[in-house]
Image (cartoon, rainbow, N blue to C red; front, side):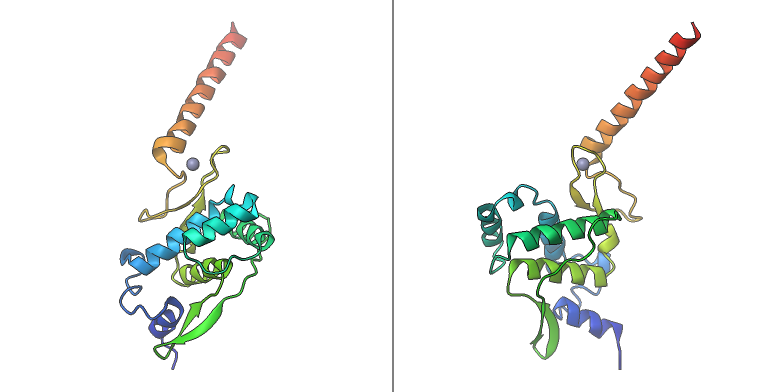
Length: 184
Ligand SMILES: [Zn+2]
């Protein structure tokens, strides 16, 4: 018989109780997936060279390093999916299903597989829509929106949000000055 709870347990590594609280029940496993995915989405210069990509993978204990080109393609696809842009939407990597304590769980033997397995778990848990890309041109960082109604726009209100507010204010003042000059 299909039981959503069991299905979730299977996908999320049978962390019974750990994931069952969803967004409100933040746990080590869930947080780890969020952090891993954010880290990967924000690896701009890491993917510039084979050496820095390998170092990134080793630092996080993600097993074998996947091909750099494949990692770049997956990152581009995941980012355009989050942005809702028309960019590539297919990320290819190897994810295994293993039986752990008699329960099937997602696992991986390389770095990209680990990232994609984390993405799949987060999507199944309804957390995908909480991943966003900061719209500030000079930022474009991926962040996770933990607000109750998913209303965050900027990665940081203190930095990018305030900068945008200041920009809008300057523009409004300039427009006002221009229109005053035009009427003189
Ligand atoms: Zn930002």
